[in-house]
Length: 384
Image (tube, rainbow, N blue to C red):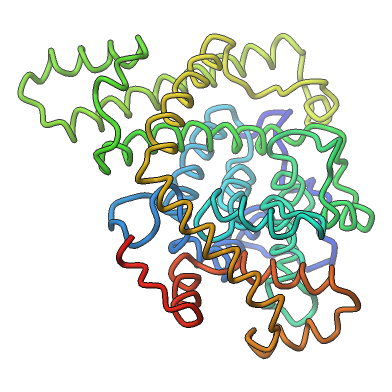
């Protein structure tokens, strides 16, 4: 049974375009299925998390990451008696707007769009879900519920400044209440993302041989976990040691999130979903000490993994691909696929054309972007 402060799918604000309810799924389950069946979701399997697609079969990609986030979010939501289907839907869709090559690709595309309003993967996620996906005869996009769209747009909190134009324009048509916090389900999806990526980037960093045991032992909590595991399993292989350490860290973070959130619900006397949205702070949170621990672990990952010479070398080359593809298409729009050429022909100014080109590039997978670059610039990417 859902808690009184949970977002009940039976009381959803509905969809931009009204539809008949289905008898065998609630509305948030229906949204989850639409997200999974979308082309953008399928393409996540060939989009970078940290290590690009061809570097190894066992590294996370955006698809496996999104699935991992959704499992964590669903478990936490169930324990808190929140709507696990809403949390799952937000978690599955939160990265749909990412470009090829992860954050490196987004930074490069944002630079290309500097004179045209910039590029935001969060705004692009909304654009995919409400405009770019074409599956249904009656409307553009997936026609998701208000609660799922709100959760995706505001999963990192209210949007009060520097609002991307597409979000502003959509909000004028379908008010997502940008100045208020989102549902508890969307909040926990965001923190599930934090739990998942820091833990699994540790694992992938070791798999790439650029992170080492002594790096983790800089944090007392991880040092203690490693000592406990070694004491219990003296002959443990390093890969298993890392996996067991990450498992302990995940459980620790989830338990703290549950304990602190339950305390917040009590302290703020939360009774309804409206109480959560009208609060001046997040109700789903870690304790202050664990928040600081997460910051320190992120610093280790930033220094040892994201800024590692190998990762930076590949990042630089990936950004060159994105920037040169943008230059290529903005100079010669005839190189785009036919349906995109038709859209650009209807664009009324240079900014509108640039936005369409950015949308096209953002939808590329790593391997398709590399293929396009090889076709036009004869890059031998396998040498990277």
